[in-house]
Amino acid sequence: MATRQQPSSSTTRPPARLYVVTPALADPQAAADLIGPALAAADVAAVLLRLSAGDERTLTDRIKAIAPMVHERGAALLIHGHAGLAARAGADGAHLTGTAAVREAIGSLKPERIVGAGGLASRHDAMVAAQSGADYVMFGEPDAAGKRPSFEAIRERVEWWAEVFEIPCVAYAATLAEVAELAAAEFIALGPSILADPRGPAAAVADAAARLTAETLA
Image (cartoon, rainbow, N blue to C red; front, side, top):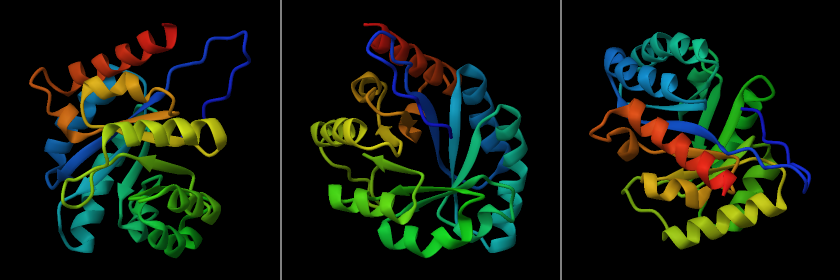
């Protein structure tokens, strides 16, 4: 996941890149049916793969089945949790919840793999994750109970981070309406609720990309 260079005042800032977040998946074919069209619809920087529960062998096999499709499209594949499986299964890194998880896994993943930090309850937590070596911080994703901060709080934190820090920020959009409002981030995470659009994942991702471009040119 390359960062977005800060443009000079005389240039137009490029739009944030998209980051696809899957629901918990168990069937590789279902994953392919979701991820394949999404990646074909627009420029997607990364896929965060969430896996349904299973033993280590089963989880590894799922990741190995999905990784080539993601890599063929030039996107990075990150695994939600399961830091120990990322390298063995051919993923590019792991997305971890909380500063303790980041600190615990950082030594085994860096520098070869990407370490993402989510579940950050405060500005302080985000700074601790970055100082610990995380490659990006994510704001706005739902917790295990499906709750997230108010959208105003998410937007404020994204804008603060993007203004002050060089480490990339990923802003989690729960709806298409949120995408343009979070355009200050370097990456916009499209949550499972967006990918469940009745028009299909390809249409949803294309719509998100168009909204980002329109916001950038406005």
